[in-house]
Image (cartoon, rainbow, N blue to C red; front, side, top):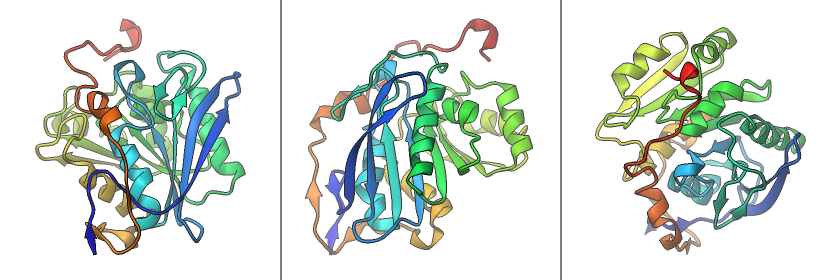
Length: 267
């Protein structure tokens, strides 16, 4: 048995993709599948704010694609929203303040549907959580997990729609989040009776040092039999070069003001 490291890459079938949106954009994407058998569940990853370093390779999503197909029989679909770049490539178009991005999420869900991917869950991180709240109530989607939801672009109407919808909605909220902390999150998500708000002690918005906790929380919802995730692996393993991501993981937001919707719509 070998202890898993932050850059451990476990066996999987990894397929680079291009997702075509209804409004003509072409999104860089990747699907990671269990190596030898069909997945038991599917995770569609919607990344943080691209104007502040968010991308399909943000560290939690990168680790999800590197580990969950092998450890939890979960397929992981990641994509760069319009205008977003990572080492995987650059999607066409430009950042559109959570408007045009509705077509990006729809293209990912459509891909999962057309390829018969099972038990599809969305996970949205920061800006991605707003996209999930606004546009994620597709019939294919079994539930959604929100990481560090800032509730900047999403509205009370979006929360009301999830309340009426009734599907599972889980919010993982860091104790020291920069935008919405657990107490406020519980107050605001009270509008969604089935929403589960989980406060994470010592956590911060970017989840540095807490990736394993987040991945295990995801697996508990998608494939409980695979939780808790092991910290060791008995089998082939490669190691990724994470140096290209260092400044986009730890200092993605820095001291910059994070853009939001027009003032009349913001909280």
